[in-house]
Length: 620
Image (tube, rainbow, N blue to C red; front, top):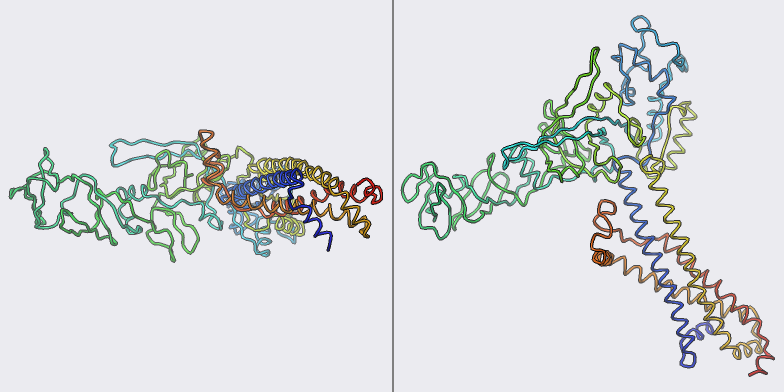
């Protein structure tokens, strides 16, 4: 195709047309810069949106079913408050699902319901049970779901440390979210016990040692006698009541397994100390090491003053544990909160670690329960079993994850209201296609007649995420609009270039027309010039975007250094920005840029096609 050959020939820089070549290069570079900016921005913002979405839907679910006002005002919900079989308390969705009777009311023993209550909805001679019917529909659809409850209580944790004789308390009013152990993303939210947690547990709960893989540690100061190699003379020095083991010591100390001798005399009540930290290696519960060239071996015991710096907790099991580890653990992938008699394990947001909380700390959850004469405070003994990432929820730093029994006990005593309007009782549904699942659920609920009792919402409609998602989409749309305008302006440089090129190539255009080239062919030559420039700019900008995304951390560090603080706050954007290329953005620039370049090339192309060969050649 001769149009391609001529177009490529015109675009190759030549000495005689240096100004044209410079304008061509400038046009390509400007378009490349815009392509680079669009790809980098949309890729990073798209990755941030995905990360935020994962955080929004990891603790919650991408789809939620919540009761409507009609549900709470129905006879089905209110009848529990006047029924002795229900202990005269309103029931949660989970309790309704587990209840044997849909209608617990007994006319012979219970008081008559108020006259202003709605009449019971009966179908086929039985009370319509919207909870059991909803669960049946979800089971028939094969959905992964679980009911949840939200409560409120005063958290009070005692922070007792071995290096501090006193005790301090951490108190805060907190929201309680029932454990959703069927959540497929929940395991990713839970933080593994840290070394500080493991060392703290070995001081307070030695039984946790059997659930730890201890490898290496050190003793910094005081040394138990059983760590001494038996019947081996060790160099030492005397400092007050302490025997300090040191390689340049003038005294000799010997331990025979029962008596400690110093320079062949009984050491009395003197204690051993270390001039330098002693490193310990562990194999199971057996400890090994070396003191002044003499090896020793002993067994780990409670309150050993060892600071472990290489240790791992065991969190995954194939079978339930009779005596569970003191932290949250997983049996075949399903999470389990440990229980110790009357104490229950709870999960705290990871921000509590900054306040000094550790796994194993004990405390209480206090809430008010009304009685016949007054309101009494009720307390539930708790123990910290782990920490989790609350994501970016508005009340994330004040939400504790507790066993469902706790939220049900609090719900039976008093109602909890969410500050952002999030339903305090509902059903979470985990699915890859929230919108499609929502339509199917609404259709099935309508067919079974329970649609008025339930509201089905996706994560884009949640109270705590709706404004965020809308704002994020508005920001992307605004940037796309601005980028499109800049791209149009950049492509307008092609018009200037091709107009100069047409004026420079008038004679050749006239010759081509004289040789039989049609108007379409002449216009196609300069239109192809615009497309080639657009494609070249696309490829160059895409390559620069890939290079930038690959080294994005360097760019972020540079921006942070310029500002004197973190350019992107880790609490909102994480420790690293996402650097995966957005294929939607790439498709946008690969389509938009050549089209705009072709459109920009049409004006000079039309001008070239209207050149009259006779007048042009006569002028030359």
